[in-house]
Image (cartoon, rainbow, N blue to C red; front, top):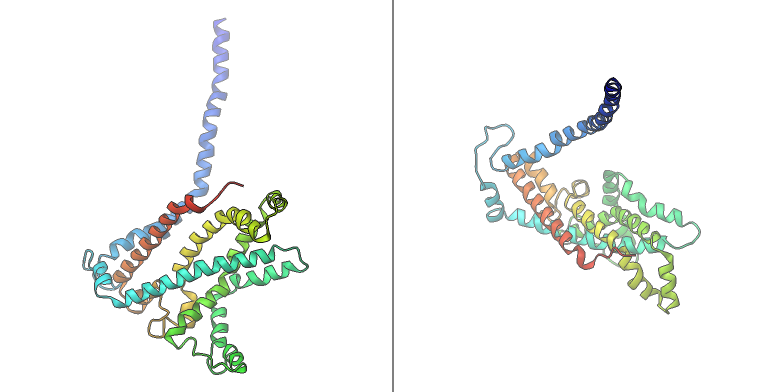
Length: 312
């Protein structure tokens, strides 16, 4: 009997051990798959971000022996650098315009593209195609459209008796012109997100509102719009972050001019770092940008519960 028990115990041991070792092998396989990605993120994203904090406290140019300045670069940004305030204001104007107008226009286009009409797929493609078009090509085409003497826009205006401005050469119109181009290029993304939100709304809710006598406007404002708020909340965060990162359109069309009228933070960081060689000062500007985006994003999350509705 004892021999039988020993034999049974010896027989049970390998399966129990294999069951314990199976999750370990699975975990090891998982780490082997994600390991290269984690190493890449640490080496090329998190590592440089941490290193830039140290660089921001020096006068390093990339070639000299850096001297430690402490918070000197940050103090100079907010006390003596008037160009920084101009750049910050331009960035704020661009961001507010892009977030508000891109979502509003995107919502209008989404409502139009949600109609059951023949050929609506063609319109969806046309509205979205600028979002995947090369930014350099867009910049050159719009640069020609804005040309004050022979450009298409001013030629059309002259045809109706209006003298068009020097769009990209006048400080009072340059930023507006850039915002128009950025909206034309970027409005397709909000349209697609909001169109998906519209198509996910339960049609029975709209039918019930119709039975209750609600007009088209009331159905949109009381039923459709509240159910779109999760999509709108997502877009406010994404559009805000992407607006602070605008670079290509500015670089191709205006290079920050005229008289810094279109210079935004990312472009200014590029100029300070690579045109002027002041890597320490540029890193300080980068950290200010990071803090602004982080604080506003946290504020957006804090305000989410006040206006975002997830109940369907």
